[in-house]
Image 1 (spheres, rainbow, N blue to C red):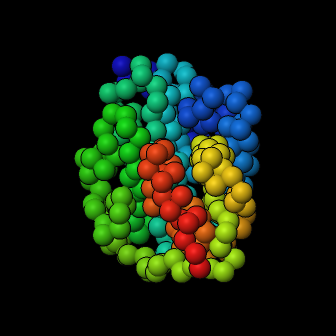
Image 2: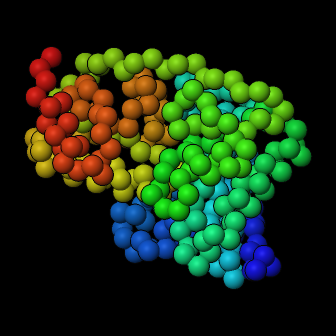
Length: 262
């Protein structure tokens, strides 16, 4: 079974395979394809500046899973960056026939081996969000030796040093320019981010049809997300807490935010 699995570093010729892993069912959707274009450009820029920032797992010669990572110093959206810290942005295996074969663990261990060989990484930081599929990511990372941090959904693996917490961002403070409008942020690290932003735009319009809406690429205008403490959505100078997929609860919170007078 193991010989059917192959892992490759990301290179320009196989960027399409990386995209295929996450987006094979959405190719042809014009909004999703815009997200793909944004990610492809971001990947090319990362490859040129930092080298490979992803690994692709092939099962029976087809792209089946991926892991995406980058130096924290590369993240322009962060107000405070730690040197020699590698961030795992996501790890994903959506291919049913490639499940329960240890592919996710092989991808993760391949990244760990790479950074150990370079001896320039203090620790690896992993974002453990749940996809609702297979083993929850917090459990997956713990199973592979990652340790909890005091930051929500973040786990770390020590390499050449111990964990260093980042400086607290502080609370969002209402900005005069945020009043009477909605500001939606998206990024190029995931091809779903832009389509999600457009979905959020539609939901906001449903409950507040007259509200001005601004959609911002946070990697193009990092100063805008930083001064809003990296909130993904601000409506009428209020940060929105509810995830947009909880549709009714999300719309209720939008209505409440719109009704606030300043």
